[in-house]
Length: 352
Image (cartoon, rainbow, N blue to C red):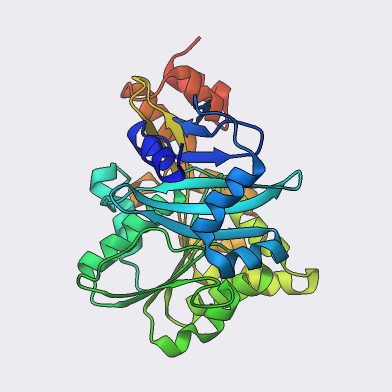
């Protein structure tokens, strides 16, 4: 099959990713499960021809030098895809991740209402975390969309590549792509202040310099969004601090205790009726108590404050799993597979 036809099929079966590897038929991830198509095996030469058309001559040359390439690809009438091209056993390979054509609102997605409050914060750092494929980009797009609809501000996004395309509404939006509009996240952040932003979205906290510049932007009165591949709020804070050399970690903790406003951790689970996926969330809001724990290197105690912070919109991941299970939206098996404390979950859910 031609590449565009494969991507059309991916959309038709409501899959999330298309995988191309030499010596194998194309495979698709549908509801988190990899399924091979009935197409013939693809040779390395066939994949290379497909991908050269997607990348173009200049980017293909860069791929040959760096062996990795992240780009966006649009198929008219089908949709937009985030593409990672790489090499596997000396052969070209790729993963195409489907980006929904419409940006859903936080209400349409059924996400916690506290995310609206977080999106309307005037300044500070907001981190959306979770494993790969957990829907972080969708959540950030919905939060940026909420700002766009409700605040007359300038939003600057720095992404690799640009995924969701935002149309300016109440806000003015500038979307910059790494390797197309700027050299790197850090390079863009070094110059972003001259672009008069109010809100800055950094696609990923990849390195020390990007993290430091994002913290500085939060300190200087901007609202900064970014992502990390961490599994809860405490781990997120420790991961950021651990990036820095030991003699700087105390200073970074002090900075985070002032600038961090919220950590939203999420993952996706299969719905009980098999109709798709649904997100579960942990939400941490930086209260004075949590700020003190960050400063005093007691992040392991944050979980208990999240448990008691329901009136502020905070919730633990296991509490949200329990809600989804009690509503019949996910199975006990899937909930237990994701629960941080399966025994406690069973006790609360009344499962023997």
